[in-house]
Image (cartoon, rainbow over all chains, first blue to last red):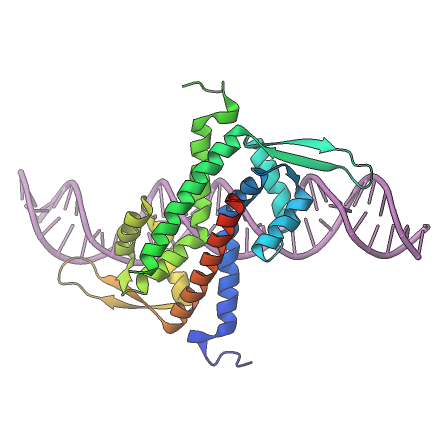
Length: 124
Length: 124
DNA sequence: CGATATATATCGCTATACGAGGTATGGAGC
DNA sequence: GCTCCATACCTCGTATAGCGATATATATCG
């Protein structure tokens, strides 16, 4: 266990750091991912959790996706419709609006810029 | 001005959205950038603001960099020393520790994963 | 009738970036 | 000497987003 014998390289504390880092990275990343997925066709919250979970390696929490979708709709980037199902509870399908596609394109450009920048920084 | 005539594609509100998005993106990104720059040699807060400003297009605020550096030091990833200058106020030079390099390498891997993922999502 | 899977929503907590404000040092101009 | 400015550090309050926990409802299966 070595509880506190090796502070400078304690792998356990590094894991914690990385976990928190990835949590922060998701702020901004998830909006992009949701818009990108919706740009390929409509979907709904519960389904997005599993599709994005496949991408990300870990599920995004319900407490994340539903507020996120509400936000995007309030901001006019996506729209929703209720779909009554023959079996099971109703689904709220979201689809991307033209404004959402514009924003997505801008985000994609900015993302590419940032990636180029990081390559430049890490490989001098 | 068209204050509210074109909600779905209002470029002004899109700019606001993108501005907020980039703010959120920086959460996590800046830690990476600071560690990456420090991995190439020691530096100090005030200097980091302008070097990273060049990279990012906009300066990072002083209220961002100083707490960030304190945090990284508290977490044992970087260390600092005071340098008295012949002219002007003293500088607090930060340098990366071995544990910081390990974390930086892990972040780089994860970042590459995420970039591949985004490419897969946006180009089906 | 209770357990489970599906599906949506909300609340409180935490972490981080930023703007505004504060402190201090030393050089240039009046 | 005195004021202005660039350099250099720090801290506080605000806003935002992800997450875990919790609540609710529908339909199916045993």
